[in-house]
Length: 145
Image (cartoon, rainbow, N blue to C red):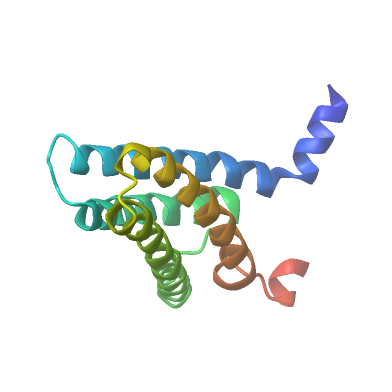
């Protein structure tokens, strides 16, 4: 049991990111499905709405639980939020491009949800790298505290 706890402590950030990323993906996919099928919205609007809902959830959960950035001081909060949104816009555009290419251009409608899942896997990996290296990067003074 102590080995498991030791491994969790060592890989806590990655484990929590995968959990939060998984929840964000479920929220993104569920929102997309709701918009695309029961509501009958087109691919792009459905994807944009799903992206926005996922990003809001992801920002607060990543900030507080994954990267443990507890400060809500305006200069910290707005800088992180802006960087987070910019990073997510980039990966959101990638996600939307993938969906547009494979579903709308290539007409792979029968694989739409599988394409959405694959696209989200790519996005999760890129989002972790951007969050760790850019958005919630700790400077040397913070790392020593």
